[in-house]
Image (cartoon, rainbow, N blue to C red; front, side, top):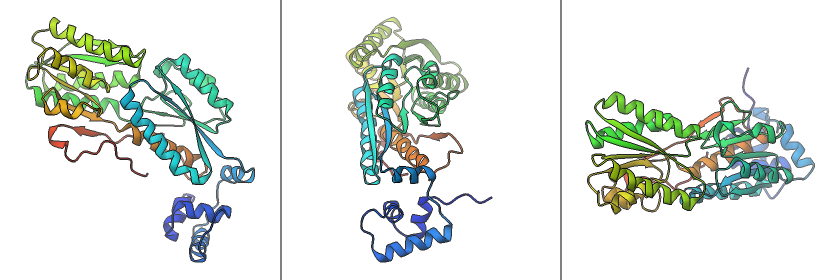
Amino acid sequence: MAEEATIKDVARMSGVSIGTVDRVLHNRGKVSAQNQQAVMKAIKTLNYHPSQIARALVNRKSNLKIGICIPQVEAEFWADALRGVESAKKKLLPFGVSLEIEFTYNYSITNQKEAVKRLLKKNVNSIILLPSEGVGNGLDQIIPPEIPYATVIEDVPDSRRLFHVGPDDHSMGLLLGRLTHLYAGPGFKSIILAANPQFLGTRRRVEGFCSNVKRLNPTASVLEICDIPMRSEKAAYDYIFDITVRKIRQYPDMNVIYVTNGLTQWAAAAVKSCRKCGKIQVFGYECTEMTYPFIQQGLIGATINQRPAQQWYNAISIMYEYLTGDRKIKNPIFPAECSIIIEESIPFVKPNEILNL
């Protein structure tokens, strides 16, 4: 059986934008006679039918509301994520779509539940969020079944979530295991700084790293896995800096530090403060203010940037298309495209670029 045509198909066939097709369908705004004729011809050829959800939204003249629950903990990382939200907001504004945004300032499920309740009071049609405490978050109990929700970055695969946009954490751990092997050589000695250990993604990154190190570099060793609590931004920065300094003193022959999230630069700053540049290399994630300088100084060997702005932009776009009937969710996993940042890739990697779906 052939798949139903979508608004994207109509726009492609008629040679106009999706916005122009939308204006023709809903008699909203000016469209040239030539474009209107092209759109109507494409609609007839493709036998396109706007979704019942979309028609209902137009008929009752109410805006489509997508609820966003986004943390504000690691300032640089979440500022980049919010940039993706704002880009999607600007893109969808001409379609009568509003984004209702609620912030949390830690990774506590209690605070997240309160934020979700505030979104529900605003009569949102769907919710997009990062589940604060991983698999034990209980979101299915507080989000009504009729409200579809999606997860970004951290997934809860056994929940009712509609889809997930995020990186393959196990593969990223495998990749950093290989990069560490290539940079540090045989028999390196490392510690792992595991931020947000309650997250499934963190555990998968650790598992991937350890398994590839064991396979590629059997004489290497992981001396200790240290949990890094993320109760607040400042506490997390202070904690990872202090524990890095303590572990450098505890393990004088350690030459690798693997950080499981965007706190990589703070571990590198601790290495620098201990005057271990050239003796200890840090490997981790994201692209923050000091990533490039620390790579150029030899403090950071490599990072993987998961491009949070792009992930949130994609999640909002997918949810909008689902609500309007222009996308069917066949596979609920939408992998995030990541970038490897090393000294040689700095001139051409564009971690902050946002691409349209």
